[in-house]
Image (cartoon, rainbow, N blue to C red; front, side, top):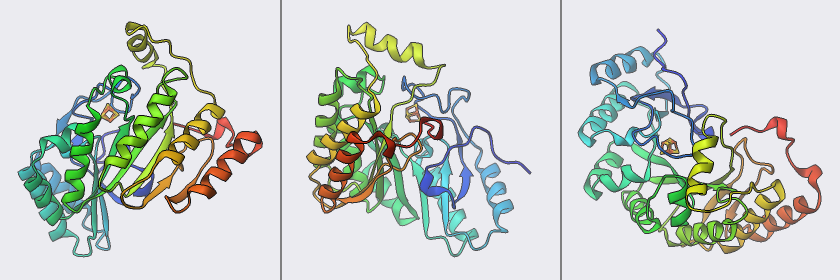
Length: 295
Ligand code: SF4
């Protein structure tokens, strides 16, 4: 049976994981740049249906990793998630890791105890879109979360012993807000107890979202001028220079949207990453051709 409701997304690092779609869409679904779930109304699947789907996937007895889709499976009640996690553990004895996307709202809504409980039952990694650490810019993109609240939510996940994989979007504030976007994003990252993995994406706004995206900037009398690849590499340089984490962060820009794939550990590899970025700014031939990119 085809149990998946398209479109189906998962992070690049979950390419080899078994995907279990326990929700459809995103419970928030309002970010002005994001069109991932615009065709889906948010829905939590019936637990019986989820158990049946797990049963039908039980032929994959070597499963070690499961990703809970769609956009923010953590929006489900904790008791519901615990039932799913227990059933997964019972079905797949070799299971080592369960991961899901988590929105800033999800982490704040769960208590520390609930997150601890989810971690004890196997949820060990959350993928989290910071997007920006600048509060004004977060309002422009209709994700008006206070940066201090994001730090609070992320630290709760860390305290629960979950790993965090977070993303920032280069070019999100256009040329006018570039400096504030990067400086406040680095500040937010530095205030977190431990972001295990940090990735950058380059902004891409789909045609269906363009009007809404620009209108929010216009409404605030803020001109939006797209950043060029070079501008975004400069943003990345500034970001890497300013990140001074409490614990080492594995940094990546391997998402298909990026002009320049990078990988290193911060702060250890800072100088090497800055050197490669400097070279790429001077030499455009190092950049991934635009036709090979996607958001
Ligand atoms: S960016 Fe994340 S939280 Fe925002 S609408 Fe898209 S999936 Fe939902």
